[in-house]
Amino acid sequence: MALKQVSSNKCFEGFQKVFEHDSTELKCKMRFGIYLPPKAETAKCPVLYWLSGLTCTEQNFITKAGFQQAAAEHGLIVVAPDTSPRGCNIEGEDESWDFGTGAGFYVDATEDPWKTNYRMYSYVRDELPKLINANFPTNPERMSVFGHSMGGHGALILALKNPGKYKCQWGKKALGGYLGSDVSKWEAYDATQLVKSYPDSHLDILIDQGKDDQFLSAGQLLPDNFIAACTERKIPVVFRLQQGYDHSYFFIATFINDHIKHHAKFLNA
Image 1 (cartoon, helix red, strand yellow):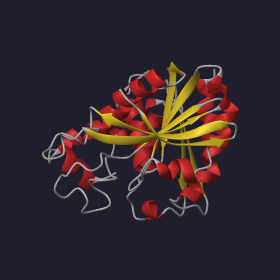
Image 2 (tube, rainbow, N blue to C red; image 1 turned 90 degrees about the vertical axis):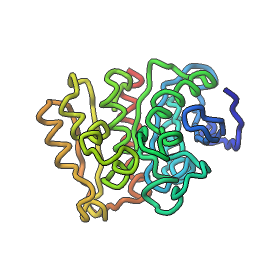
Image 3 (cartoon, rainbow, N blue to C red; image 1 turned 120 degrees about the horizontal axis):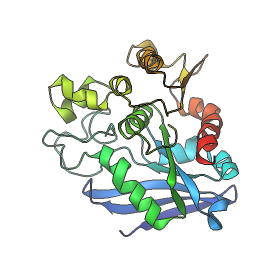
Image 4 (cartoon, rainbow, N blue to C red; image 1 turned 180 degrees about the vertical axis):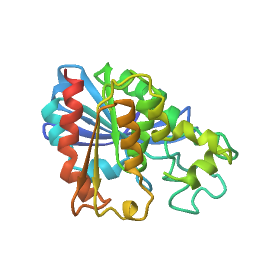
């Protein structure tokens, strides 16, 4: 599958690049950011996938998070895909910020008119890793996933639905629109429900949550439910409630090095 390089910038002796390709899963052109650490010039490296939140593109994480120095130090390739298909000409796809363009929710839609293009789950799970492994010096046996907001939930979903694939590890409107009105079908993309049936305890989850996050205070984030489910299943999870921090990339930039280090511990073991 042909890749077109959109940009390349030297960064901490490695390179932050952006590529474009024709996605067979999403049936549109897609972009992803990829950081290649200096180690990638001479050796195959583990891959860490970052999933961004609502309204984001591949640009938000690579320009705002400041993760590249830690990725260079630990020798990790970091891939940041876009958050949804683009330009599919679906009626209503640009009408709201939390559904349609920029809001793929990392699910495979089953409802018309979304099901043809909105297949972000399969794109991130299957198509993108195959593309990355075929074109860059990766170690395919060592991959992990993390993210923020919609993407943080997406990362949990991918890890919980695919035991062994990864070394470590929003809402009624989106799931109803993409998956239909049968609430039982939503459980396939609900991290709290999935963790209850996870087959073993071989996960190690790190979650940072800003205590002043506006979505937390509005009741749209329910971390306590997830923590309780993990505790019941004896799945290791570290949950850190960070005083004074909100939902923004200032919060992400503050703690990103901890998360890179957390994943590197497993990917470089």
